[in-house]
Each structure stands twice: as C-alpha cells, then as structure tokens.
Image 1 (cartoon, rainbow, N blue to C red):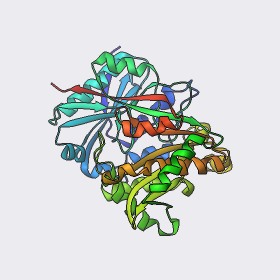
Image 2 (image 1 turned 90 degrees about the horizontal axis):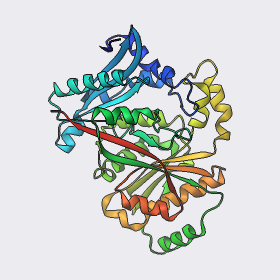
Image 3 (image 1 turned 180 degrees about the horizontal axis):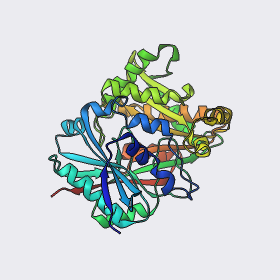
Image 4 (image 1 turned 90 degrees about the vertical axis):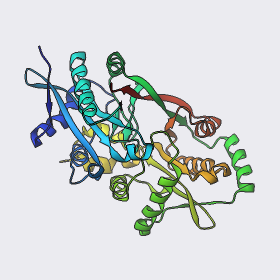
Length: 371
C-alpha cells in the first residue's frame, strides 16, 4: 500500500502529529511521554520564539488514511548565520516499523530543505542543540532522564539505510554515589588552595537579574562548542520559564571572579521518574501525582555547565560538579547523569571520568549532503 505524505496545515493535523508517539511506544516500558500541553506550546508560533527567526514545516506519513509517521523539517537562520553555512535540520521523527514510511518522510524533508537552498540535512534536532537532540544508539535498558531523547532501536537502521552518516556522538555519563569520593575531596583541596573564584546559588527573589546574568554567560561560554547556536533573549526566557516548574535552587550555581560572572551550572531533578507514570497528561490528576511524588525523586541530571573561555583552567568546572554532587547526596539523590557531552570534548570528559562517571548512553547526530 502506498505511503502518502501530507503537510501539517491544520489544528487537527497538528494534534495527530503530537499524538503519534503514543502509537509508536505503546508497548515500550522505558518511554517517557512528553507533556501534551508542552508540545502544543512548542509547536505554536505565537508562543515559541524559535519561529521568529526560523522556518518550520511538519509532515505526516499515512497509509490507508492512518497516520504512521511524522517528521519536522526546519531551517534555523541563527545557526546558519553564526556558522556561515547552509544546514537544514530534521527533528521530531517518529515512525512505526515501516521503512517505506521512514524513507518517504526523509525524502519529503530533504526536498523541502533543498528547495530552500540548504546544502546539508542534519538531525535529529528538535529544534536545536539548545533543545533535545540526537538519536539514542546505545543504552536502551532504562528510561531517559529529564529533557533527554529516547527512541526505538530500529530508528538507527532506518536512518543509516537511507544514507545518513554520523556527524557527532553525544555521551551521557552516569554516576552512583552514596558519599563523596575521597579522590574528589583531594582534588578539590588543591583547587581551593589556588582558587580565585567564588560559587554562589542564584537568588529566586531576583530572578530577572539572574536570568540576564545567566543569558550573558551562556552566549559567552558555549560559543565555541560544536553546533552551538546563540540564543536570543526571548528564546532564553521562554526556556527558563519552562525550567522554573522543576528547578531545585540547590542545583544551580554561578561562578564569579571579582564580582564578574564567568560560569554557570544547572542540574535538574529527574522529573522523568514521575512523568513516566502520567502518560503526558497533567489533567485531571497529573499535577497532583507530580507534587506528591516529587520527594521520591532520587536522580539528578547535570544538564548544562559552562565557563567563559579565559577562565577555563581554574577548576571552576570541578567546583560545579563537587557542589552539585555534595547537595545531591544530602538530598538522597545518589544517582546522577551528566549529559550530554560531545565525544571530542576531552576537557569536559576527563574530569567526569576522574570522579568515577562512566558513559552509559550514546546519542548520535547525522548529516547528509543535499545534492
């Protein structure tokens, strides 16, 4: 039976796009359903600032009028302006075990991007490296942590059969601690003897100021990372608004030298431990379940950590990890993930491995030339 590809042009079609994963993952115990309300917001041009500078098109794959796959093609104008290239992206790819449907979706995304002058298609990227990205290729034995991706194993074969080639691997490190490793204590004693910086928690009563400070650090500290896209302030505030719902202020730190902000670290309680139980619906009882279960969360994800380039050799990154782990242990969160880390970011990987963290999940981003 022929696969039909249809652009998403209506509210009902967008709803089909959002709901498809419930069909794909209905028997997968490790899948964490996204919040439907958050998906509707993310895909709404009036609510998501990403649409102000970028072009997005959603597609559905159908057989016999039944939706069996989806994909988004998008052009991040800020990415291409910053990197001086012509890269288009695919993301939000989901498909039942039907390669013909996957092939048709990739064809449609490729053609859409090529017709708009793009030279490379890259993904999965939803919508940028500032959001969830990468295809899980190793580590399917447990659910993903908060704001990390998950997918069926057969997606890898679909993507590679189509002709995509690996662009970059992203690693997730895992650590299980009941007490601080003695080796880490010794390392921090050496750092403290020579340190010129201070770490402080953010002040919830001055959130507008703090967000501006973190926004400044972010665009300074991450600008040399592969795939980095500078965030505009309205995008950054849109993201922080979402994070405020789950943030724990004991896991957020700013580094300063003589009052100047030079680094930032954010870790989040792994709310996925509870989201997995509510199947994407906050109503009528989802919020209540989350509130009652929040104290049962015993995992933390170090989601982002950056230091302004000229201050990278002062041990600030180690201090961020040390304070985060110390507070996590106090709170009974003995298990943690540090993710994601670029495969060639040895500066970031080395200190993680020194404190006993091990790679337990690998995510992959693919490229294909559009010729």
